[in-house]
Length: 220
Image (cartoon, rainbow, N blue to C red):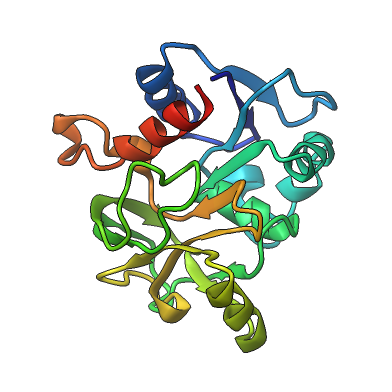
């Protein structure tokens, strides 16, 4: 499996993501600058966490218009897996590759803590090695992680298995405890928690590794 990681001004988790991918696949991912217009051949495109463009305007709003995002959208439409983590999730929503939006945390404070996720749908390349209902302990670190979507959008998502994860201890006020969502085809995943920071015992959890391992096994 060959991965590409898109780096924006203000990204700060690209090295963590690269390490997690290398651990799972044995291959170093390619780093792609946001101002590029072409992507290398890749089975997975990952948008990492951070504070792209300093989170000016809305989180992810400026990054969603970066030149590389046009090609990310083209690849996603062709079925390439696209994974947005934290700021990457915000960017995917702003680029309309995922439904909904990320708002300020309900308590209006930055949150950095360990949380527990419940796997809602194991029928995807990202969650293939999980079981529905499985609990994963991982990390959140964000100020704008409060997921929101309109009632009709939420119903459509629930009906089509697009809820990937729910918080068991909602840290930000996300509607229906949603922590991560798929697009309808389930080749695009966005999530606020950081599985790349839960892959080694020193992190306090290795539960995040299962998502990287799922992709490696599914794609080969």
